[in-house]
Image (cartoon, rainbow, N blue to C red):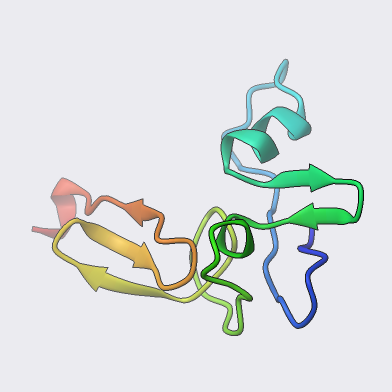
Length: 88
């Protein structure tokens, strides 16, 4: 799924761990994406922090991430992915 806001590069890809009985649309909503009459809106644009201008590793919007104490955090939607114990 792509964000339909001007100049936004956000994507939402189907998660690898999506349960067989779970709908893609349920995963989209859980990730914070909105489906409005004028199109899909990513969590960064919906929260006023978009558009996503650089792609990276964010699982919610594919925005660029930075490593912070709480984990790998998206510069756009602010979604953190906690560090795994293997990284310490």
